[in-house]
Length: 204
Image 1 (cartoon, rainbow, N blue to C red):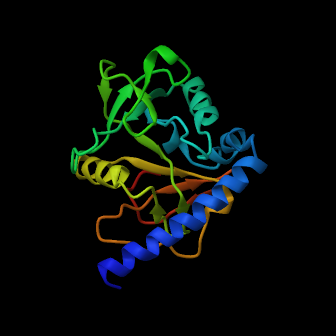
Image 2: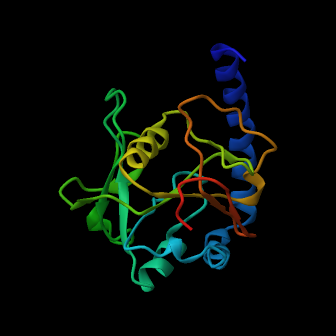
């Protein structure tokens, strides 16, 4: 498939998945709480010192209940800061913060709540990754900006990191079209269950 065709296919799939996610978001308002039980299926790899989560944007599933549960088990929490618009290939940076403390947060140029820049920057051991769609081989479809793909590529080049997609079960599709720069997930957690992806970063 050529690049232009790939872009068109991804764009069409995003439109379908945005509508599907909005529907299940309305129907399952407490889905974020169920992520905690699903995450219990993951081995101790989900409980390292530093876990990166995110503040849900629009109809994304809310990972904060899972983040709170991990913090109660001793994990330190951080959130991503997005690069400024027009910053090219810059990756996300991660900053220690309390996702429930409004004094730690500000709205980015993208409209996403993120940690303030003065908070300590860290390298996460686990990243809870938002998405529009996923398949069982660990492929992920995001918003199309490439922030998480660039970030995971850079982090994996420096050492192990566990990428855990968080999503509603309805966001699963048979196959996500992929490009060479797309980064696969190690695990996918839905309110129903957690799916391990084999032969990935090596963290169990």
